Length: 132
Image (cartoon, rainbow, N blue to C red; front, side, top):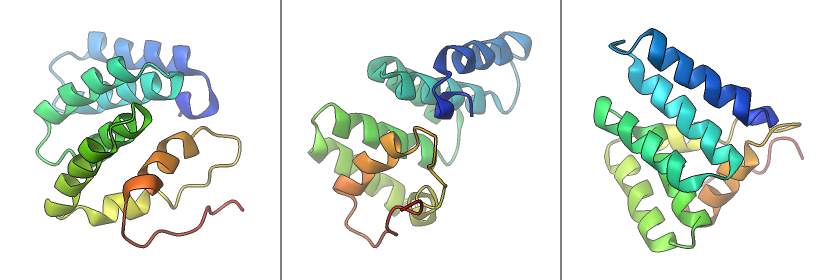
C-alpha cells in the first residue's frame, strides 16, 4: 500500500524486512510480490520483474504476479510478449483477476500506472476508469 501512494522506499524496506523475519514463511511469495510491486511503482522494472518471477516460482496460481509482468513488458515496449503473458493468466482460468484489478479506486494512488498498460493489451471488456 505504501508503494501505491508513492512511498516506494518504505514499501521495499518492509517487504525485505518480512523476508528477513520469516524466510521460510509459507506465504513468502506475498513478500516477493510486494517487493515487486514497490519496484514497479518506483520505475525499477527489471528488479520488479525479478521479484515477481521469484513469487511465481513459489506459488501455484501466480495470476496477479503474471499480470504485473505483462504491465512491465508493455512499459518496456514488448506488447506481443505482454499479451502472451496475459493470455497465460486467462488460460489458467484467472480472467477475474484481470477484471478485479480495474475495480480499485485510483484517486491519489499510482494504481493506474499498472492498469493503463494492461488496458492497452487486453481485448476483453473492462470498466471505464472508476474515478472519472
